Image (cartoon, rainbow, N blue to C red):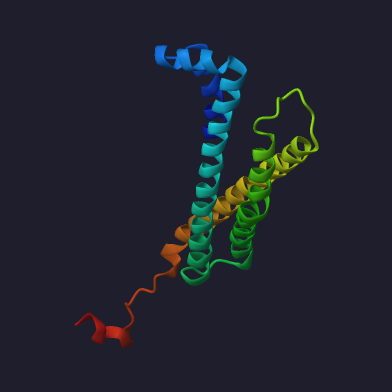
Length: 176
């Protein structure tokens, strides 16, 4: 999502620097500053929608992962804790941070970048907190993945020792 959001904002400058002929006329009529502000507002709204949807999908993935680990495996409490922590992080992002980021973002959408406002400061503090939580979520996901992979390999390397060969005299009735 970070790449999508970044590219969406870069597309504003690409459109303004090389607009289609019909768009060029509209940009001239609006003025380049207003056209840029309007296009950035449009991109911001798209990004807001994308982030809310992606967070909803992440909550679904996190719930599925947690319940699969809880009911469909013999994973340790550490694995369950990692999955639950990832779920809590994405829930905090979706229900606490994102609504506030959206609210402050809409307030500053048409305020020029050069004009400092308390809302812009709050927006960036929340944005950085969101990014930090995202990095933490990635680290937890990587740790959980490594833990599951290493456990799977350990288990598969001992499979040969877990097989009980039925070749005992008192099991002869099984071979018939």
